[in-house]
Amino acid sequence: MNERISVTSLAASSSGNSYYLKCGTTEILIDAGISAKSICDKLHELGTDIANINAIFITHEHIDHVKGLAVLSKKNDFPIHMTTPSAIEYVFKYPETKNIVEHDLNYCCKVGNLTITSFFSSHDSCACVGYTFESADDKFGIATDMGYIDKAAVNALRNCRSVVLESNYDGKMLENGCYPLSLKDRIRSDQGHLSNYDCAAFARFLAEQGTKNFMLGHLSDENNTPEIAFNITSRALAGFDDVTIKVASKKEITFFI
Image (cartoon, rainbow, N blue to C red; front, top):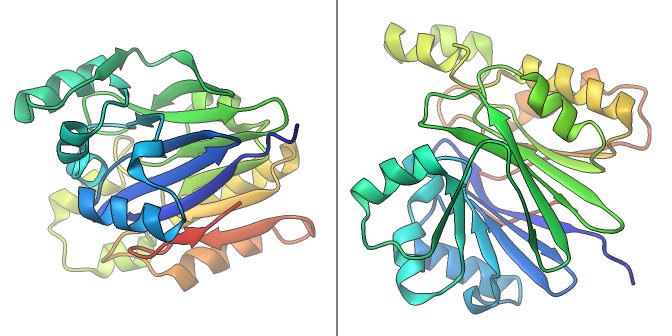
């Protein structure tokens, strides 16, 4: 049986992030950073339903990753996986949320025909992680919201066929933009976000290890453009003829793999 993983971005930006993953009969959401209604509507566009979701995996507790989570939880019984520190912070604000499964930074579980493994991501949340999803035939990884590329991300993603990587900001746009200096320093710190050039360098490394498909996500609304992000990673991957690059739309559905 073919167990290839398909991934679709429902939304991806500094305003809200959510991804839909399907492998056989297993259906998963990664983050719920847009409204519950938007998530449900987008799933219907894809020919599925929120009732078919087997689990949600949350990278961290910031609002652009959990905005719709409490409402989704009220009407559905799927487990919601997130790190214990993030869960504590999240439940303090949204105590009505059901079925949270707490885990540590290095976590592994099975959902349907997938093995899901978490890995550390450096970000100024309570405890941020990326995830890999592995079937008998395929492996996909996602790493957004990371100030630098930790060895945990390198080890987790180096054998993935497809990855979503953060390409958050353009250095010149950030430097010359309207943000206060404190926010600029936060974004480019080791607990902030990855620049386009950092993302491109990591993408080249992963391509050398065999990764074939790249989606650039979590682009800043103010300090980046899809064209700039795409061009920088494209130049870094020049010579890899069998590699594909897509940029996730900020608000619209983007098919990946």
